[in-house]
Length: 74
Image 1 (cartoon, helix red, strand yellow):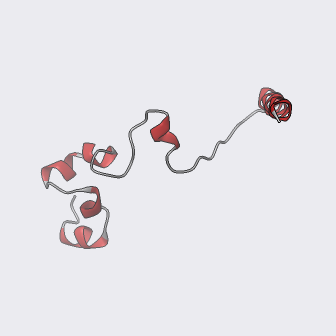
Image 2 (image 1 turned 45 degrees about the vertical axis):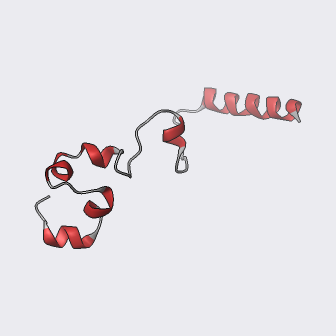
């Protein structure tokens, strides 16, 4: 099994070495594991949005149509 993993890793490495471009898709949580701030949640990037702080809005508050209808200027 380890041998197969090494072969696959080598194959991927060879492909990336010869590629002109590379596009990587990742699932939710990959950024958190790498130390990046999360997008959602009260500790995420929304928390750094000045208008959210100004109006004391949580992610759930600001990311819904009702809040937009009530405060379209935010």
